Image 1 (cartoon, rainbow, N blue to C red):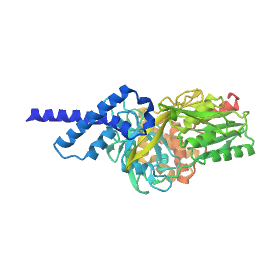
Image 2 (image 1 turned 120 degrees about the vertical axis):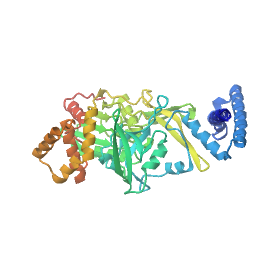
Image 3 (image 1 turned 90 degrees about the vertical axis):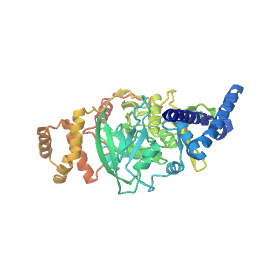
Length: 477
């Protein structure tokens, strides 16, 4: 009996592998437009496809008619589709169920409650290692932002369920919910440090640009994401700078997860008088395009520009950073960007559909963004916390020591902050003093509803940008 059962299990595994492999040929030949595969019409390719289709037909009938339990054809097809897209090894290409297709078309404007972060699925590595969900960036002013979630953090669990086997769309579904409801996350920061985080969902309203002047005639703007309105808001910022006599500019693209291609191309027109901003190249020649800035830049070439980037700068943010770098219009400082430089198309089939990567972005000098990212001219990074410091940070959070301190001292004096830091040290706290002071400052601002446009007190990347501009170390075109 055991021998027969093992034989059947092996036979079933072979069938499922064949279904997942062969169905790819079925979909490519039947579901997608014929002209998308014009280069695949050679006789040898046709013969291979015909053999694959015949194999699929035989296996499909055998499974449907002989599997020990009755199984619907739709279930077999859906399972094979899921496996086909997983085999691409591309987290951005995915078969979409009817529910996922509906979720993809939702907008964030009052449609659902969320926690406020952009996420990406980690690529699969060695066999058996879980592929968790990485935070690309928290959205400013949202529950995740105020809870201290950082770019690069991993979401390893949601309500006790591992995110390893979940798709990005399944994770999004679990993070969304009724505004005011709570979701419990298990986060990982650094190599091994894990902590629990309870976030209360809220309606997520995403800002686009914030700006102000820094002493010394430096115009500072943070582009938070690229929307249809971003270019107009950037023009508003430049107009403000002009009225205040700016002599240089800082563009902060850190933690900017991207947005609309049209939004970033329009924004580039503020800095370029025409010319290439970004191109796309794909296997299909129809996907090869070039996107140029409109003539009529409003920022003179005499204005030196520094762009701040980090691992949370992705997609459209990388396009702008890459164009400014390649065309010699700005100096980039910070850390290499995220490396999300691929273009997806969504196709509907019945109630569901799929999302498929069709091309990749390249910068004006021909550099591909995808997976490599945009590197800065000068690397400046926030110092990483040690495991001991991460433990102290978690202890501060779990014990609510800073929150209780600010509740008792809404506007703490320097002496009160010094006393808090000293007590923390006596209790064995390992977190460096500058971090503790920064956390206190951030909690004071959070309680008061204050959101800083820039942070010259603790932001060492911004400090370096300001130093370079004031010392005339930034080249002009």
